Image (cartoon, rainbow, N blue to C red; front, side, top):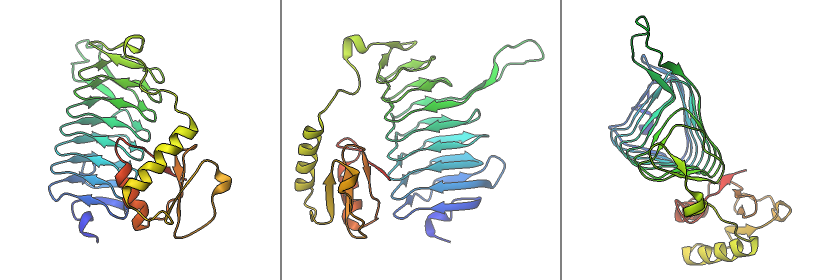
Amino acid sequence: MKESETNIDADEITIGLGVKIEKTAVIRGIDGKAKKIEIGDNTYIGHNVQIICDEFKIGDYCKIHHDTNIHGYKPCIIGHNAWIGQFSIIDSNGGTTIGDNCGIGAHSQLWSHIKFGDTLHGCRFNSNHPLIIGDDVWFAGHCLVSPIRAHNKSMAMAGCVITEDMKENTVYAGVPGREVSDKLGNQFQEVSLDRKMSIMENYLEISGLKQNAIKLVTDRSEIIESNSVSYFNIAERKYTKKGTEAEIAFMKFLLPEKAKFTPY
C-alpha cells in the first residue's frame, strides 16, 4: 500500500501519481469503508480534510485545503483542476457533480439536501436534490449554495447566497443572489485564438522549460504521437497527457489562474 493510502479506508482505491495527502486527512465511507475512492494525478488533500463518502472521485491537479469537509450518501464527483478553499463544506446527500476548472472559495458551503425538522409533526422541509456544477464555475468565498444547477462559467461573488439555478457566464451577488453581470460584466470575455497563442508562447518562455518537450498547437491535426512531447491544444483547452517532468512542471506553472487545460 502506498504511504498516501494509509489514511484511506475503502474497498477500491485508485491513487494517481504525485498525489499528496496529509496524514491528518480522513477518507472513508459513511459507516466505515467507502466503496470506491479515486484521486487523480498531482492532487493535494490538506490537513484535517474529511472526505466521508461511499463513492468519491476527483481529477488531476486539484487542491482541497485544510479543514474542508466533504460528505454524503450519494457519489461526489469532482473534475480536473479544482481549487477548494479551507473550511469549506461540500454535501453529497443528494448527489454532487462538479465539473472541470472550478473554484470554491474558503468557508463556502455547497448543499444537496435540507433535513432536520420533525416531519411527523408537519415539517415540510425534507428533501434531497442533485447539486450540479458545470465547468469553470467560481464561488468566490463564503458562499452558501442550495441544490441548484450552476451552468458553465457562472460565478458567485463573496458572501453570495445561491438559491436558484445560475445562468451560463453570469455573475451573481447578494442575499439572495441576483444577477449583476449588467454592472460587473460576465466572468469570461472573448479572447481571440491568436491572442491566446501569443500569451501561451510567453508563458512557455518564462516558465524556463525546454520547448522541445512542450508543443503549443491550435488544431488537433498538428498533434504527432509521441511519448516525450506534450501537446497543448489552445483551441480545445486540452493536452496530450504524458506525465513527463516538463508537462507536470508546466501545468503547475499555469495553475490556478494563468490557464487551465484538461487531458484528452
